[in-house]
Amino acid sequence: MTQIAIYPGTFDPFTNGHLDVFERASNIFDSVVVVIAENSRKNTLFSVDERREMIEKIICRYPGARVEVLHDGLLADYARQVGAKAIVRGVRQVKDFEYEFQMSLLNRQLNPDVTTVFLMPNVKYTYVASSIIREVAMLGGDVHNFVHPNVLEKLHEKYNVCKGQSNT
Image (cartoon, rainbow, N blue to C red; front, side):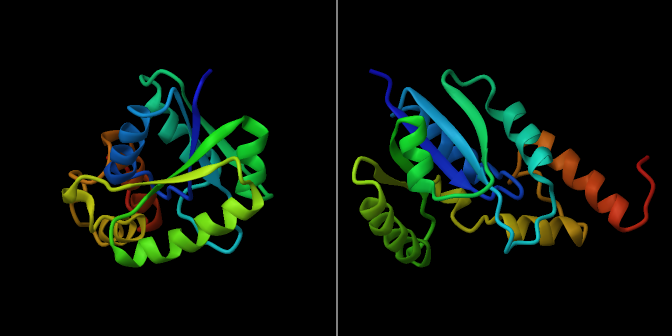
């Protein structure tokens, strides 16, 4: 029986910390579905389609990997729909754990057949957050150690356009 896990997030953008957690999950589960949550409360830099395309290029070499978009509805229901037995969540610090712990208890109530699995990224990514990456990139800082080259290129394109600079 194939063990499916889902790895949800906004992923705006997908960082090396996200990739590290994804890789760890891929070593545990037969199939890992990266689920891009379309969250209307967040103003994202990249569209859902842009995020999906970037992530697909990064994870395509992993067997059983795919990217889906959750436009609306509950994650617990989505897990049931795809037959997932686990929800993978990356935890970088205690603050993350408190929030994720609450969500895992709620998801367990909504879908008792799914288990939340907390994975810590490599220590070099514990302070890396998508919001920080966006801000540093916007201000012209070097983020190449924290994102895949494909994401770095897209960040440069996005902020060059935003700053009115030409892509040369």
